[in-house]
Length: 121
Length: 175
Image (cartoon, rainbow over all chains, first blue to last red; front, side):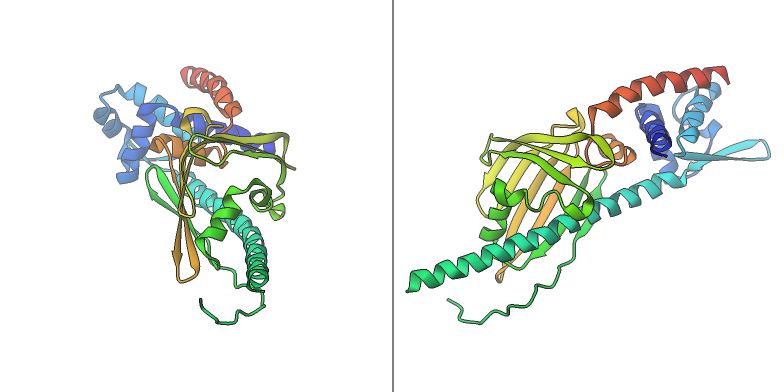
């Protein structure tokens, strides 16, 4: 399981390491596009663009769908899922930290009050 | 001096929010029921800091915690986590330290893709709003942090990346 996750994560990492592929993701973030559209936009051959799309597809970042003779690319669900999941995990970590921090702070407040009382005497 | 008597009951837990604010930054906010001086103290004294930074409920244990909180000073924390055999090290440098109001540090464990963290402490009527802002060098760096599924970039992932790129490239060429 851990292995599988690592491979998957590395695949998306690899997919994101290329400037053209990042550009394609950005483009698809705005609107779905055919491979021909993408090839035109990035000044590339159809074959070259196909290769990039395959890498993105394998990483789960893009999904493609063939309608008639046109293959349309759209953003894979993983892009959104990963971000939401990551933010939620991150939020939970901070919440856990801050709940512990509350305890430290309460202790410091109590100590300060005791010190004040001592000073007044 | 306010003579209001404070209740001894457990404090109500305040809400923690996390928000991606732009392509390369996100923000964590939380309010604490104490003046800024106290909150700041808990963030900057190692013996206090290590009591909350690695919450047990998250399976984290702190192995070591060194912090020299002054502008230009460095920090290094090492955590243990049941999922990873290797302890995780986090380190960097304090770029700005303004007592009771502001802390800025670098996160150098991820190499050049590390974020700059700015924490501000804003006191309002005896409470303190803490805003923690992480700014990544690029959209790609933040995306990579998210894609790697971790809040800590490790060098290992970058090494594996080169290998995998080669394999993926070969596979694509064949098909």
